[in-house]
Image (cartoon, rainbow, N blue to C red):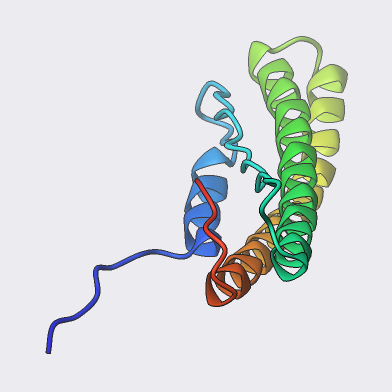
Amino acid sequence: MSRPPFRPTLGALVACALLAGAGAWAQAPQAPKPQYLPFAEFVASDTTAQISVKQGYNAAVERYNKGLYDYHVTLGQHDQLVDAYNKGGTPAEQEKARTEAVALRTKLETLRRDVTALAGAVDQARRKAIQAGVTLTR
């Protein structure tokens, strides 16, 4: 009996991408570009069931893409603060940048968990679509 090929879930891929995107104090901030998911396309020959499944998938993708956008906007703000801290300036400016960056790191952790959960919802919607015989493009 042969094993099916390894296919990591979207959630696992997102978790890896988000971990790679976290800013570090010692490195120059380089925020990765978000990889938004495409929506399912509708065709005239879609049945009512296919339309329903595609709508559910698209709703999950929309929530995921919004969460990913929020994460990357916050990551960009964090990276700007890290850059301001690393450039020096007055001790008061550095302390302000550090304090604000700490708060954003907490927000980033929450957003990371949210995006990972949203990726799981997209995976679930994709599986439901496949079970219904709907082909989704990547």
